[in-house]
Length: 243
Image (cartoon, rainbow, N blue to C red; front, side):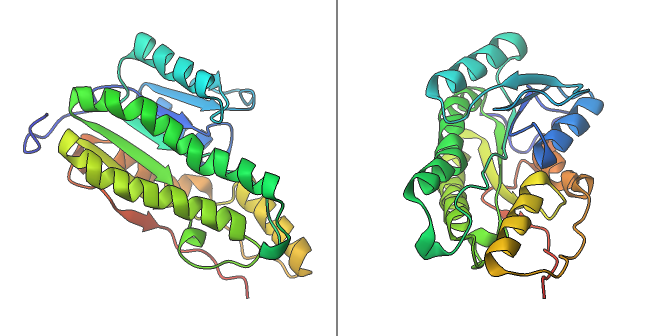
């Protein structure tokens, strides 16, 4: 295990960003790439036009695809120092008693089980190096009830609690796990707002959301060795109020 008292000048390996086709994941991967950090972004959809970083098309709900992704990253770049998990879904938005079981199952497969698949493949490799940083994009909805988002909130809550347990178990291995909550104008946030408004019959405008770039600094810090004493934390941006 690396000496926790010895500062390091930089990461020992690449950063893998899952859910990098749009929103926070895409912006973070672009920012890391622009700072000369080896970064691999992956998502189910094809690469957005003009993508500058190494982009892989991968479905996080597919065990085989996830295994091949991590194997290829290790072969080409080395063992990842960081892994950021962003994927979720706008499936299963509506009143809790009306949610479709298949939609909920698909939502949990992406939000929780996809994260578990990523951890299962990355953490043992990080432990070999005695260092690593796992960052989960959580949600305030995981801790504060939000009407019409019972499915999303419960899936995020499950993923967040998994990450907290992971942080405690992985700390002796030199691997950290933290949760960040963002407040940003992303496709997922906008779609959730539209679906909620339709369900609730609301017509008033939602307050402007911050730019996604305003949310990147925390994740960037957690992915550096300078954050080597930070683990098991949940840090989130304040959400605008929809009154």
